[in-house]
Amino acid sequence: MPDFTVQQTEFHMTPGIKTVREQVFIQEQQVPEELEWDRHDAKAIHIVAYDTHDQVIGTARLLADGHIGRMAVLEPWRKQGVGSAMLTKLLLLAQQQNLSTVFLHAQTSAVGFYECHGFRTLGEEFMDAGIPHRYMEKDLA
Image 1: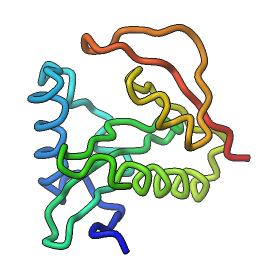
Image 2: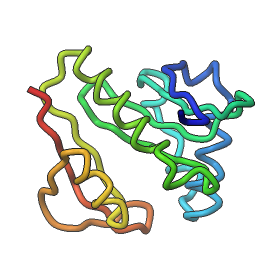
Image 3: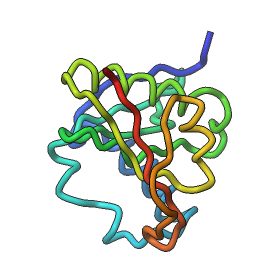
Image 4: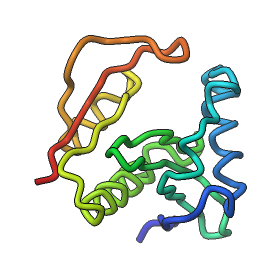
């Protein structure tokens, strides 16, 4: 049994979302802070992973157009199934929203992770916030 849970939440109700994204994207990956926060957070469906002490250890979001993004897991929790559990939850939520396709901009180092979940890579590598990415999508129909 995993030592974490994944739940849907509201961005403004869960300060741990900002903490995880600041640590992973801004501190670890050196993403400029002004690129991390955007107008989409207020309208997105957010999910978080909690440890057994109710601390947020991971987060991600789903936009109305099917864009999955801002997936982040704290370093001590990586490679323990947290990312997979969050992505599985996002795919379920996308199906409940009657989306036929979801897409994301995967950091090139994470392409294999998304491929294991049925995403396919389209197009050429591109830079986003100084990090190489690939466009990926998955049909839900």
